[in-house]
Image (cartoon, rainbow, N blue to C red; front, side, top):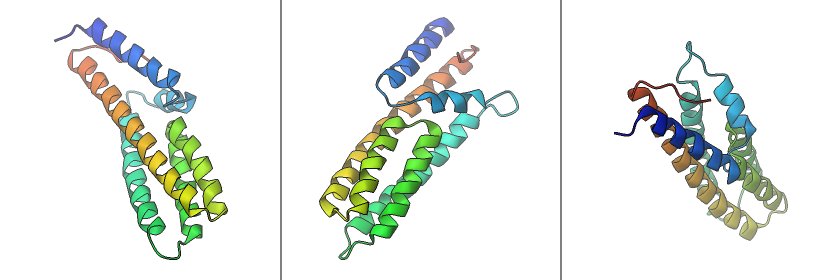
Length: 150
């Protein structure tokens, strides 16, 4: 079992890499700033809701785009929602792909929408895996009796 200080360093380095890679932006820091003793699981809860929402929206988008006569209004609404929720947790790369996706939807460009859908799914999977790793590190630090660095 790694020592607490080792885990804390790992956590700090890992989190820094998420910002350097553009996976997260300062909105994630602001979210963490809202977490305190009275609400110790705030970030994990907010992010879990983001995961649930995103999966539902991505499934909806997949269904909608695979139908004959695509409902671009519905595509636009779903992409707008996904962009908003990814922005609220600081999932910067997901948010960026959503902007291009929205433009393709407005142009009724089905090819562009399908490509964007694949990109969004890819970026979403990356942010989900990386945040789950970050949360596991937090759990390890707490389990070892340490304090999670902010």
